[in-house]
Length: 120
Image (cartoon, rainbow, N blue to C red; front, side):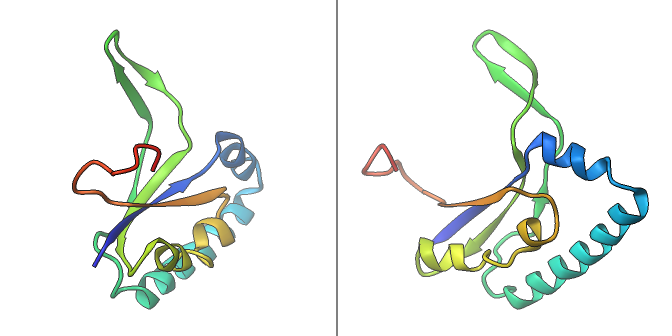
């Protein structure tokens, strides 16, 4: 079955706004979000190939060297589905966007060879 990477995105300003809320509100959102995330994982356990991986601060490497960098990637998970639409449907009610301050989840095929269409 085809595999898809689902990349959780979160804008730095959304994280900052969330962290500016009272501690009790943050804790309530965290508790509700983690419970919902666990329930989401149980509902879709058959499709999940790898457990969720959350990511920390970025260091970008270029030909010129490496330096601290920022991006919107917060984490990822690998799932199996019949096609990209079915994979995307798995995430419609995901807590990353339904409860936490995530701004989106990008779903894309995991390729084992270069795509035929370079714009894919």
